[in-house]
Image (cartoon, rainbow, N blue to C red; front, side, top):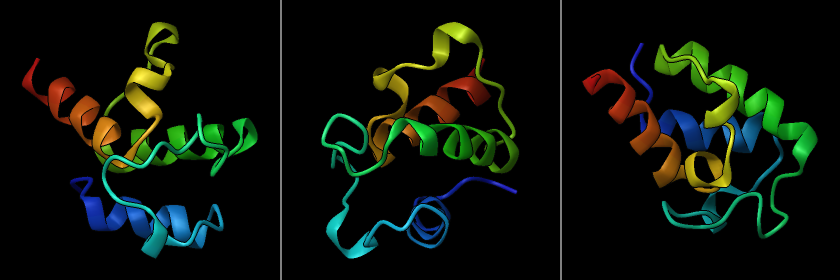
Length: 81
């Protein structure tokens, strides 16, 4: 399955308890405190599974995970490699 913005927002809302109506593609998820570090593990597992990508230790950064847009760009970039 391909990771879409809609699927990612659905996960964030249903599994992480975030009001998706208050989150757009550029909303900071972690640096704003919307999602805590404990939820990051769940998010990474979901993105790896649904996006068909693997995060290496150097990939687990706010540059790749701090917004819906950044997550989707990370997944797209991995598929281009």
